[in-house]
Amino acid sequence: MPRLLGVDIPSGKKIEYSLQYIYGVGPTRAKKLCEQTGIDPDRRTHELSEEELNKFSQQIQEDGYPVEGDLRREVIGNLKRLQAIRCYRGARHQRGLPVRGQRTSTNARTRKGGRKTVGSKK
Image (cartoon, rainbow, N blue to C red):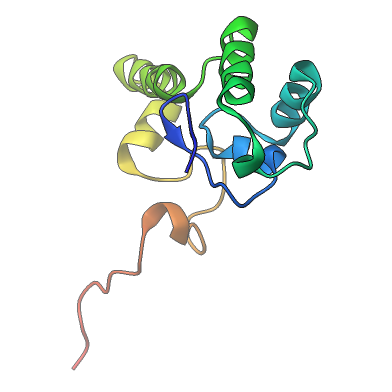
């Protein structure tokens, strides 16, 4: 399995999809990276040489996109800032509830977790 920026990327997939295993690289950015490096996006990852893999990591660093650890730290820092200033969004994050105005009397199971039975009738 080839490593790129400290991440194991799958070797059997096309490079365009393998790049998306890096946190912060989505479909659009992966396509753009293939164009900028001049590598065919339809080639499989295991077909690439070390030089070609290095081209990708250099291009990502040149573009200045935050990826992996830097991006994760930035996102966590943003959430901590919202919680520190005690704003509504920060409080919702803290309580594990939906942040963007969704209803919670029904649904919202992804954020709230599984159902918890409160009391039981005999």
